[in-house]
Image 1 (cartoon, rainbow, N blue to C red):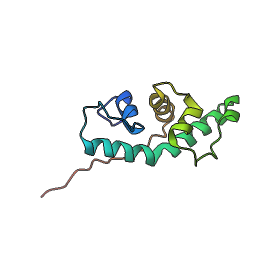
Image 2 (image 1 turned 90 degrees about the horizontal axis):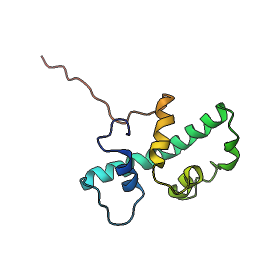
Image 3 (image 1 turned 30 degrees about the vertical axis):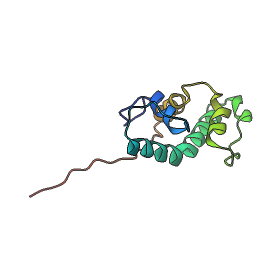
Length: 113
């Protein structure tokens, strides 16, 4: 699951990096919003993952080069998770569990007289 999303991480994962014909049952505007949301936040998420690895004293940080921001997103994700499916869930879980998830939508109450 992805917090505050109605679709599962597998569906969103297939959509955000795919350039081929999509088999997702979602409106074009929804897919556009998912892609915008994803590309807006991917650098932040990867930075959080890097920070968590350093804080937890992991030796895996030497294999990941965050200075490679010029690489395409799918290659940067591949540095972390390889080419296997399920990479979005692997990003979401630690970011959310360590309270670094950014809320992208706000609900508010309108006060009417």
